[in-house]
Length: 394
Image (cartoon, rainbow, N blue to C red):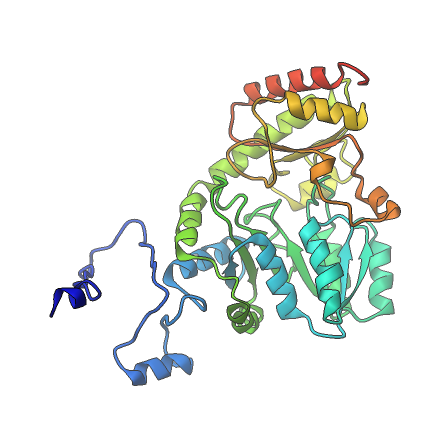
């Protein structure tokens, strides 16, 4: 064998029987082969397991899929290149021309955009309601057959809590699927409810470090099986190296989520007692309108604390600029604490009535609580609130 051939066919190294890597390797390969054409054809006919092309499946991404499915209490999972890809590919795979979707004002902006704008181009109609309007959901389902109901809980950004059991009852009685963006609550929550499909952004709590993007669609085996070919053709595939990084992040998932949620409660309690704050939106507070429902549905109330400053937009600007430990940037669930203001929350697609339903005011602030020491975060928030109230504040 000539050297220029050898460098393209290096000697294989396989672990002997009974010898295992503690951390699974990254299968950074697009292509896989079988020992013969006959075995390749058997794989393509579904007669034997294996891997052939990473756009369809890969051992590293498959390990992540199996882990996430188990955590959510479901049979199977598909991972994607981003959370937005998980939402869009799931909705494309589950709907067709002439279908109808029930969705809600209190929804992540890209998801709302996809339903209202992109699905509409393909003849899928929708009804937009408030997540609190269960009678409206019932009327909408009675008025027109819906393919699915799409929602999130707690909602982004003001942490409204959906009555999941009631939504499931209404959707299934009408023959509709229930699809839930469960990103805020995480993989260990809501699995006991009769949700058909969960979608997650792996960019958030799964990765945890804010350095890799991904998404997941989790559900019953037959539903996931029906989506798999569509996902492969759409091509929003998670790279195996990104899957490896997310698997590494998942090792500390529970430690991070529970620590961040505990700190979030302390932050919410502090904000609720501050004179510069009009209202705090956090399901873990007894003052939250759906606190009792949240406590029935959730183990932890989440890591997102939103609140309304009395001084409106001007106070919000002063507050955001004064903070030292909170990064003014998108996303959530990372080890660093983050802040978003109304200017960055993306509700410009809503009309005035819908904006009122969204409860996002000129002084609304969303905090994503990280892993910093709680006392340091409270001190930073305290000096930020002093700055907010400095001139024109409440």
